Length: 322
Image (cartoon, rainbow, N blue to C red):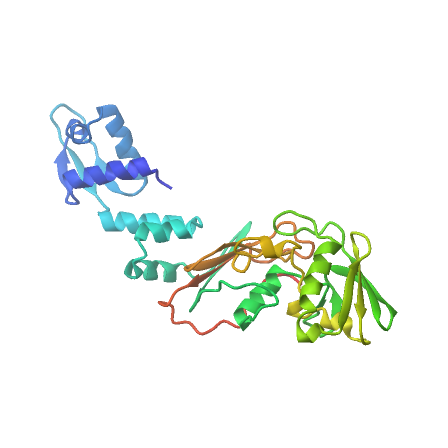
């Protein structure tokens, strides 16, 4: 990406010369930008490499060279915004264009879809509204619920292929008696902020879930060491492992209630972490320290605006290889 200083020099030159072809000497150009001939020659080379102008130098005293500037102010602005979008600078591109939908819309539409390189895969999709609540245990719409399941894990999960309950944060469990179950946590599982999961997080999360009608038979959740939790029930529930795969039983950090903006910038243990979330877009990136299979897409961006005439999203393809 070109430097801001070079852009400023080009705009000064554009103001002095315009976009029509001209015959001019190197010294005259240097005088217009108040610099030396040597520095002017360097600027012309850099601007030509950026594709902003054509310069044909003519050798010999008194001979005039050919110069044509190829970008006006508007074209330079759009080009810079495209470069920012390509490099992931979404907020910077929006700020540069001043939230002018007439400029933003064509650019964003051109950037939709997926990009694949040898070491990088990204997906950009449009969406008709913002998604500022990704808080498990609250009222969630289908789109948010799908993203929440990519951000958090439960003790168990349902295998999408056969519908059977299987391990997730808990690598095994056993029923001690009809009213007591013990779950054993995977070691070294990390939250997106780098802190390791412990039984305290599970106790805190399931105690919160117990306030919901679906979990009203939870009598007590207690920690038995850093990687073991016992759930005491007030009535038998032989399908408890399946119940714990519900999205209202996802495991949150123990201190989630004190974290600012947790609803829009949640911290979980899932294959994706929320990198940015505002009125324009939601960006999720693959979590390098996820304990399961690595996510297929390294970056997912949902572009949210009323200018998109998209149907509500109920499924986002190929999040993880599991």
